Image 1 (cartoon, rainbow, N blue to C red):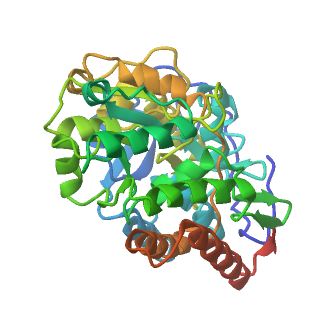
Image 2 (image 1 turned 180 degrees about the vertical axis):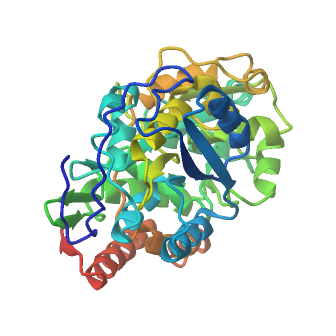
Length: 427
């Protein structure tokens, strides 16, 4: 089993592999050492039903679920405390952007060999997010391919063609503003920093990468600056709805036709169907616009992984359960997640299909997922979230620009990594 020593992460405990891979269906390979119990933390509602199903079919690998409450940041803190007290679980669901921070905190167990047989089950872009410098720490659990959701009836009423490029999108934003004063094509509020990152991720190479013992950081690259300038121009020309994404009035703006489109991850679709009262049946889906006509690049927004936690005594059995949980389509959709697995066919819940005029939008999103560009987070990304939030607020009130955001974030990330003793390669 390969183990890697790095200055940015402590050495994980060496755990013997049992070689049990390739579980199919709900029933897994029996545990080599007799019945085992996997302690598992997840904050997703409905997980208890799936765990019960697994336990009934797998008496030798029992899963003990503890429901994690609170924000992801609170769950991260809870895990750190549990590691200190010796009460940490064997397996835990966490977002992709927390994985490097967990590595730096020496909170994960490498399971490269245990999951080697599962790699072909998942999209390459999501598999990369659980793999750092050749070591793998779990399996992808969800993904968030970006798409454009829009009011097809309003587009037709205003004579707006569905934009395929960002140049066409910008012109469409101006046309909407001219033809229907007080109406916006799109918004980018003060709490939309993850959306902005995903917009950048469609054009830019990953801001962070790990090579040998050093992390490279390049946030202010020309491609990122071009995306920042684009959205800054829309804001400065008054073409953006500045309502915050998580403000209750956001859904009012969509319901009452003051904003005609949303560009966001796959998780947006069921939320729109559940919370937008106006235009049900008139909404449609299209790929997010591209920078060059004919390109089909998308990016990721959201998603997480089932991770093996430090001290896990049965990583092989834990990964068998994790692989089942993340490759069973019905299981994933019941958790309101969008899969990270490869699939040729995906169903759409009836209520979502109805909202989108009967379209099988999950099948569309599955095709967009194939075009997601790779991305990478940093070991101090969670610290950078505060900078991102403050900078997006400044963008909203006009006291700062998105270019300022890139520069501020780059400086903060370099400084925070150096403060942890991490070797950094600067632009």
